View 1 (cartoon, rainbow, N blue to C red):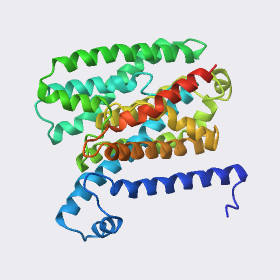
View 2 (view 1 turned 120 degrees about the horizontal axis):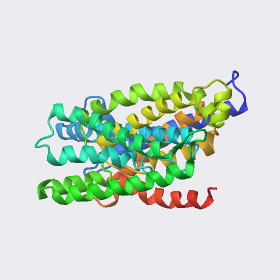
View 3 (view 1 turned 120 degrees about the vertical axis):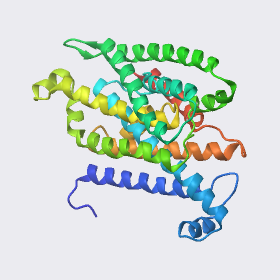
Length: 338
């Protein structure tokens, strides 16, 4: 069926196709999930221009943008985590655990809490503000974790990230306590990791970052393979290690920051996605990066669907669903890491 590829490549292609089919299934199920149920036939009819005005409102104005945002966020966070694990050679690196999500969230939180109204112009500022917060946090963490002639030290990176994340969380709590009661509920939900920007404006806010940065990162797969060999080996092979690490870190920060601006703090996607992908397709980033993106998208869309289903008519933020699975998995990885 795949005459140009070897056995490993054929297997990886089948894994990617299977993940894509699972996303399609989750996409269809998510369109039918909510307090107001739409049967599969009603959904298909509405998609092709039929259906009542109410069904069109539910599907096109509420559910479809939310599903698309879930897919974009999942892929962005998972690929961001994969980049960080590659450049730091730390299997526990993740934008949530290292505090980069928290840094992005803090800046966005300050803006949302004190800006009087989220108009169209201010909505498009959110990813920029999140990128600034994530970038400053990443610079602090990676500069404290870098040692000349030794590169990024994995243990120091993890401990520094946890410490910085704790400090940012404390600042976030202080700001949360000082905002007015009308915005407190929104901020609390956003901090839990809710797909709160469920409209097409937020899709347009997030889409350029994903469309530009993901292909760029995929084009760097060969470089990431070399970086995994260690700094001295990579230098010996002619790779400008420090320059490439900065470029890839910038891409990871851009992906994580833009996703946090729209979704709030959804942790562990950047940790679990690459780990599961590595088990399925191996270490080579030509397959690892797209597999991570697909698994991340699947995780977030399923988490958002379960959050809308479990406590109807109330909702559980997708970030809480992911954390219920991710926290035990992180402890398992921590116990089995050297």
